[in-house]
Length: 320
Length: 320
Image (cartoon, rainbow over all chains, first blue to last red; front, side, top):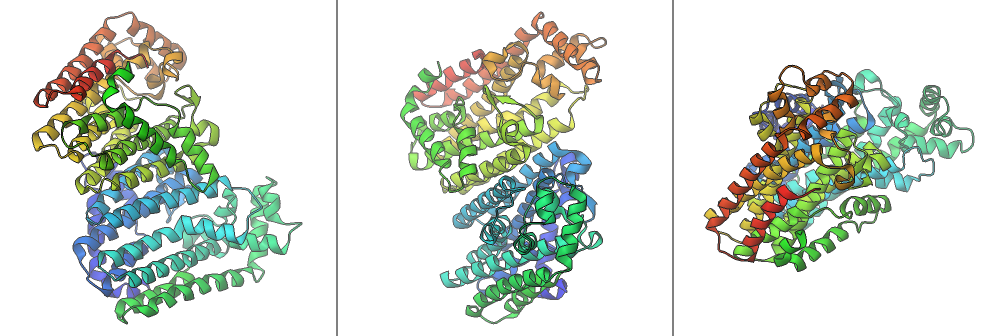
């Protein structure tokens, strides 16, 4: 499915993989091992694909787009490595996490290295606007995550706060991918705005879908345990809707008040699965996808535009 | 003492303090609190001072030097916040650490935010060479720290490996400060190299002095417990010399083999204090200071050059 969507940029994504591999070519053998392990395990590469697809409308210049595409994936990996250390997660994409295998200290330092590497790559775009945007995006991501950490196990969270949180946590980075692809291909201002809007709305839809999968997915599909968000005290859209429906007696409420964790997670998962909440969440996600695609109307109709439209569908229909 | 050294740039260091304060002016109250706490507690500000003093030989332009000076201090703070989380340190500069007060997860995220903020500030220099150098320095710092983490509790470490480690861990950043100050003031190539050489050698001396203080300082002076390096399994120059002197029966060896930790730390401190090892370490540090100052011969003789020479003396004579 993704391979069809990536078709217009397939060859260049191979070059991104080569660049990612070369990130691991460093003198210090332990670092090299950690880099290969974290960068090589086949993520969906949606972020680099977004950079490249967004660069296809005007001046598609790989000398800038390739370091940018590599950079967003390295940054994404950095955030995953730190997230896993923070959440003490043991499995990611079906493999033991860095913190599980090498310890939390190594995960922190590897994440720092990856953050810096992503900045070094972005410097190769030679574009000061993109360089600054990149740093500001990392600021938004980490303050979004801090926001989440400070609101963990807090039941008083509105949909609005949830959207703000996932905007910082996820949408920001997808938005950076599309906006930088546009800027680096010398897109006119309105097209930059359109691609930025696409990336932002796609990112919100992407995260809502992720949060749904944490309720309805299977561990085999996702490569990580189901119900992780609730276990971390993170209130996502399905949980917020469940709380709205049953404001008094609710397993999420009991769980957040530290009562019988595992039992209440299972109860919450069951209640959500057997209700129309999932459908409702998908409707919200689809709405963001529609908004994402509306932004594309302004752009020339080409294979990349069709791919971006298909990608919006994919994002809410995926099972992992 | 430091105030005399900083005299030529005193007014501009006040501006750096203002900029550091404004880093904390963000919408999200928790983040603001954490930023004020970590940036405001009065470090020695050696790194920003190095940027400004190094900028004083040619075209001293604050519009570039000020964001750079602020940036290196923000980066330094980021590394401290992450180091404390990694080492599970409870006290820094006489105050409880971020990880102690708010938890390790917040410390990781705050460090990430600070890393990104430092990158945003460095983008304001509008100098691509400096921007790239900055990212590469963070890569060197984190791979130096990773190297340290992977060699923890390993007794087979040479002086050479120690120097390589502290070069990545500390000298890199001081070197970045002087080199970027030179570049941003449009110093000619040879002067850039000279100031870079000064910063690097000063950094080595600085770290050796730090490592000595961990043996001979007091908790009151340093604002953190004595013997922390040994407790973390980090082999510094005094410990390496002690192992060279007593290769067989040695408290460091016993400590690293996990025998009676506290007792062996105290024994090691006592043995080192009552030997000529400290003197020997200071001789090594002084040698690096002399090398640092030799680099300055090439530069115009002005108040800043005199300050840099005095700073080299300060670095090995300080008690905290």
